[in-house]
Length: 534
Ligand code: KIV
Ligand code: ZN
Image (tube, rainbow, N blue to C red; front, side):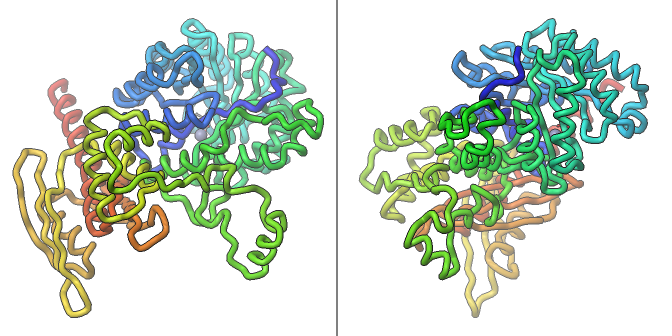
């Protein structure tokens, strides 16, 4: 193996590290929808989860391996601590992928060794070597990460890397776990590895980084200049704490500035060959999907995919752009698929046209989901003259997101105005099948609805975020409501789209409550099992 591949491998960890963001928990259907879209985006590797973490995580990795891990599809990877049981679970979960990878890790920094692992360097070295060899007994494609590499003693890390490569690791991934390094330091770490690990030519050098100081993407670009050829990133940069390096930023930096980066990959400055396998026109769509399903909103000024990323507000800029786009634009919105929002359907469009357009957009839904989405499409088409691709995506994402259907919103009615006290009536079908109606007064219509739902559902929680965004421009636009609520330190997200934002607000709240209630049920179930086994 040669670590000087002339393309950058994009390793997406949205479904593993990204899903570790507070409240970003996804169900299996949602993970599958994201994995399919990542494959359309053209990522080389999907880290689909941490198979040992829970039966749900195992099933998600396994389903993604079966469905998305085709011969021409991406490599499907599962994370595993350097432990036999983790590696065994990872191997079983990826076994149906045409190309499967096990990614195992153990920390190498003294802080982690002393306080977290309570192990000596010699012990960690032996575990790393043994566990890579164990992973290798299941698959040829083994990745190893020395966790907290950014704060590890380089000499010790070189020793560990040399041993794991000898044991069969084909990718060695250097994580800046706590987002501590600066670009030149991170570049030097990669350079040091190339110069001091004797068998480094047998492995690809990968990097992984968190954004605690806002430096993750800059660190990665410096790593590329020094020999890294795999970049681990997430859509919209979601992930632990301040998140991970954002895929869209890395890919577009490598694309827009390819003349700058070409020589570092041994190409001529003017080479037009793309530096990654990413289909950049899928970027915007992927960003929206991940944001909708995780409930993690994209800040308006976010690079590449933020609502303002291609907007020109000041008169001077607008004037310049009208005269020549190049005055203030370094890339065309088209390149990330931002202007691909076509008006496609209307109220006379039939089921066939609906199904065909969904298929063209990459959604292959079951007959049942199609029927449900079609009913909603007809309803929206009655209210809104023109239905665009983004409207269709909002509707279909909503359908994917419905599970778990524990509480069901049957009716919501509000009265409000400047002379009225906002009052809401709701009817909810509870998980045990009862249909309950109640009413409440609030400071506004949404507050009244949430109070009424709380009276019926009786699931304690604290609302921590509520946001409304419109899918397209225009007074008849579909509104998307995203909410986040917390209970016992955990965050649960809910999302819904409707031309009526009051209905969307109620449904988003019920969706979040369902996630919370499902977790409470799961915890109760495990507590009962533990009590029986005590
Ligand atoms: O941040 C980190 O160190 C990780 C490793 C498991 C690669 O996510
Ligand atoms: Zn990480």
